[in-house]
Length: 253
Image (cartoon, rainbow, N blue to C red; front, side, top):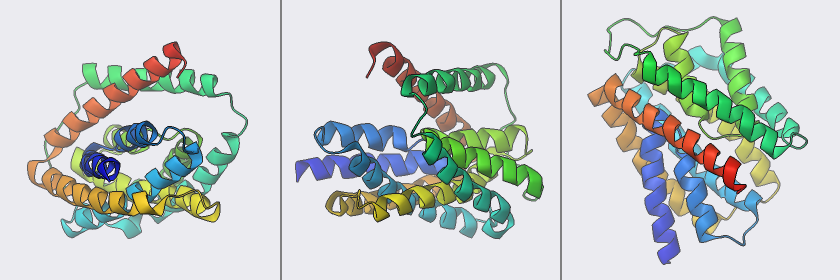
């Protein structure tokens, strides 16, 4: 029982973080592995996806109700993300883990440097949502799905940065749109874990309730306090991911 309470607390925080700037998995996954060190990694990853799936869905609904996103306008990206996540999961079966860590570390390091030295505007504008073309959406969704299926951590954060830098969106609308694409990548992964019976429902469902609550609070705060909140959380998540990868690479964990 104390373990479930701890995990639910982590899920609440993860839901808030993920709704604002992405990266909730950086909180939930280590917590699950710490509490259940002898449990199959597949079961723990599936339990994490069960929780984060519902949180992402609620964050998307909340952003929609606040008029920051129209999900139907991102159908191409969503479809590409579903295909990409399946392809990424397949590739993950034969790519060496250490090679993947090094590649992602380089990517995250570049993103972190970009955020530190290139200040992107954080003022919420009144312009309508800027929707990329279908071709751009296909590349964006497919790439995000591939990365999520292949590696995972920080998918939502990378989506936000792409939409801000190359999509011309402000941080709040980018975060809202990222939820639609991230929900698709989560759906593909969750479907696989359900089919493989790699889930612990007695833990995942209570965590899902808390993740939903955190997601609702986080998306509401992002809508109220604007892009500066999203950018601040996003920077923290990317820095944490970079640190995590460095530790794993040099300590071999």
